[in-house]
Image (cartoon, rainbow, N blue to C red):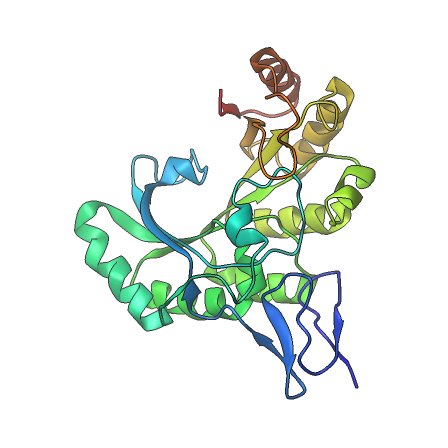
Amino acid sequence: MSIRCDLCFHHCKLHEGQTGLCRARANRHGQIVSLNYGKLTALALDPIEKKPLRQFHPGSMILSVGSFGCNLHCPFCQNAAIATAGPESRTQDCSPEALVREAVRLQDRGNIGIAYTYNEPLVGYEYVRDCAALVHEAGMLNVLVTNGTIEDAPWRALLPQIDAVNIDLKGFQESWYHTLGGDLETVKRSIRLAAQSCHVEVTTLIVPDENDSEDEMRALSSWLASVSPDIPLHVSRFFPRHCMTDRLPTPVETVYRLADVAREKLHTVYTGNC
């Protein structure tokens, strides 16, 4: 008998012992469990601007944590070693309590809280939820860097614990999202809901010959402005990675041109990786 994981739109139906496509959630004894709970693959004190967040406590540092797994399969993934991995990954165990103690210890180095990042943090939803509650109890802040691929109910339940989020909006064509194993409307809903709850910034990676037209950027930025023209957009340059090593980097002039298109509708547009 199978059971269904309802965390994201994939709704993986899993028989006993099976793992979902995210490689981080599985059916164990008739329950959906998180395989990456408290399993860290990365831990670093980063500038907040690296998330990227440019308008949330600029100049501060944040303890950044990652695990393994992702519910998309982007061929250009910059962190494929952990995003495409599963429980076989080399990890270190870290309970929510231990992680928050480390965050507090680093306050004298400018740390303002914890950023859940590197892989897709929402596939480890329960760990993020439990850590985030303790972070707030400690008087610190929670930042989430995510692809926004999560269902409505768990997203609404988590948002009160999140202070800032950067959401990848990987383009504005459903066909491109289908290639990545995602769903554009799901990500749009996540952005709309987050904008009602916390500080939001959005990142779009410009991949040559995929999402680099002025028409698409105009449609994307117009929609984002309809949510709020004050949401900062990061227009980022692609470099060959993972399964796209046969591509050339995005021309710098393309990034600048598309940023100018986005500025027709949005108040703040940044360029990245240039």
